[in-house]
Image (cartoon, rainbow, N blue to C red; front, side, top):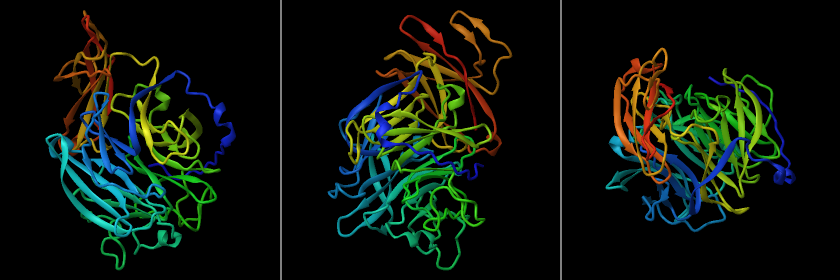
Length: 469
């Protein structure tokens, strides 16, 4: 588990034009035409779900195309100058079987309130909405990001609504990370279940405005990415019942034995938004399990470089966008997806871009989990190849001791289990969701996967990849 290490890294806004793009990487536009999108989540079948903050729409990118009709809509919001609107989305680990998509939004009609609920996919669209919780709120320090952890529970962030003292009160929902069962109830092992006066959904507290939430791909530990006050934006490794110090502490601080200092803080504040750990293997190995964080004030994607033991060793600017960055996600194709604006000062994104490594093999195969809960959830086999062709893949629990030459290329993984073939879309990407049994014996098991892609002139074997449950 990653514990606190404070590093302060200052960036001067006047140097923004001098920031170089990452060497050896290419930036590709995936889709344009979004309206104030603020967060995104991948489904196991490769579809990318996005929220539009003010239209209230869930938009879907499928086969590299933005679908014309919204998947669902939570309502239209009108207070564009606030933090109101559609702020959070999460896909259930068992989405292929239950079709469940979770949403969180701040509604200002009839008084400010945070609404938390769930849609179910029916016929390719969201239906059967269930509202789990309504919490009174202001229009400030809203947070509202959400995601499923390795334990199968849903984590949800709430800001301190502009009232700092509430972040320290266990009787207040504000300034917290909350943890729920997928039916909206509270897990019995939450730290404050049965504590008089405490809100039982609280998992951790003492946070100002945790606008980003992600999970380490190996340990499953949740992390928040927060907007700070005067002393810096912060990244926190969230611990059960952890007190993260707001409003007593902010920015770099000594460990007082009571509160948890940040993993990383930055001042002047770039106004952090969303971020993610890179979980793919298409980038060079030193990038895996590094965190990539977007920002609103300074239009950058920041890289937080962790070593193999989980210690933060360096920070840098990885990419400069033309406008504010609202979210970053590690994609099931091995690319890094960036939700950003093409103009300065906007409060939502109009474009999704992806960052690809120039010398990554093509075709290639990738294995990723929708969340860090692979056992009892879903993994996705993603194949990159020639557009509008087909590909097959297979897996085994060990690689061959030496590559076996074939007419198609070197065979590294003996095809012990052949998977269904997939069609690659117009963007050269195909995805196969595989449901994983809820078997504790799978924890720590590694699978090796290889694929064969039809490039239009014949089959080509992909390099192998591995995935550990």
